[in-house]
Image 1 (cartoon, rainbow, N blue to C red):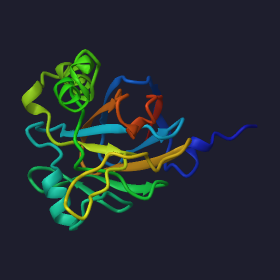
Image 2: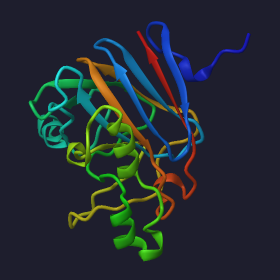
Image 3: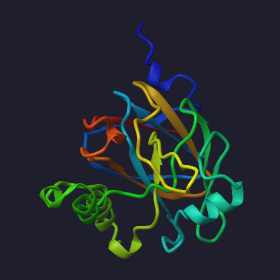
Amino acid sequence: MTIDPHIAGLPGAIIHDEVVAARAPWLHHVAAGQTLRIVDLEGNQAVDFLLYAQADDAERYSAQDTVAAQGNLFLRAGTVLRSNEGRAMMTIAGTTVEYHDTIGGACSCESNTLRYGHHTKSQHACVENFLEANLTEGRGKRDIVSNINFFMNVPVEADGALGIVDGISAPGLTVDLRADMDVIVVVSNCPQINNPCNGFNPTTVRMIVTA
């Protein structure tokens, strides 16, 4: 019998298991107490991530509250992802990657043009993925806030400048998120090909929910 290494150590029974295509959006409702595992299947793939409260999606993930509460820019095992009301939304229950980014933001057609040239404007980007997923539940562009970038390496230089460099992930590495309230998870499996956040080659990720 072959044991699936991607599910090792997960609590409870699997209730949802899906591979998200390269460059694609994903949305799923996760109930309090359930665990979401994100698997970087091929390595070096950034996963842009937003959270909304199911009870009232005016309450959503807040990078400012999360960073201020833990006194650190980077997300590690034990980090509590907090809402704009300061409440716990999800907790990083475990991760096989040392840290994750919460300040690098999401790529857009506009930022691609500014950073990489006008010829990139037609390329798909994370903001468009967020819009596509959010529209299914009545949210629009104003509902997109600063996001998390799982598996993405955004060092902060001594002068305060941010870099986007090769990721620190590898095939099969994971991050586990335990829901502290009923949440709606919105993901962009980042389509960026102009910087090394995806190794210039966007690939698939796997989403596993257990209860």
